[in-house]
Amino acid sequence: MTNEQQNRITMNKLNKVETVVFLLGGLMMVVGSGAAVFFQSWAPYLFAMGALCFCLMQFKQRYEGNNFVIQRLRRMMLLSDVLFLLTAFLMFADRFSLFRLLNVDYLVYVQYVHNNWVVVLLVAAMLQLYSMHRIGAELDKEAKKR
Image (tube, rainbow, N blue to C red; front, side, top):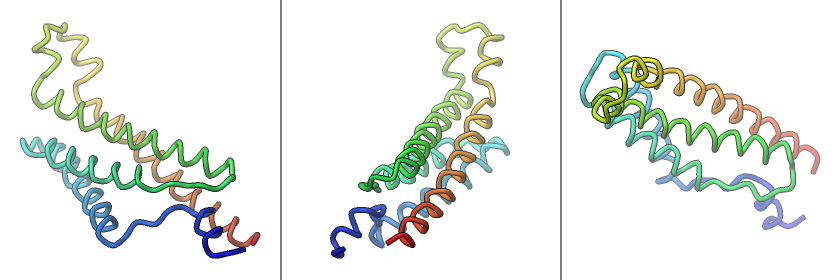
């Protein structure tokens, strides 16, 4: 098997700058979500910038192999990225009371928006952790087959 064929089977790797952007995005998400717990006004901005950097770098990575398990896990990872972006939106909606400005009933606002970004963030983080761990294991298993 040629080197080009082996590169097509694995996940595309990020270069050094993209890796730094990816890691800084993750760090900004952690700091932003931690600061939001302590009601810092700048927290949604930091989280949103971090989520955007993190998600863009994950969207940039591709899997071009035929392993159905890795393809499924990759879709789970992309779903968690969308949930990270939804978390950023809900943080802004909670911070600036966006839904109350639209004349949404206060009970509906509290039930569906108020601090529910935490639940969405938890689901996204769990999907991300599971899919990253399993993708690594599946790629190692696939590499051992060759």
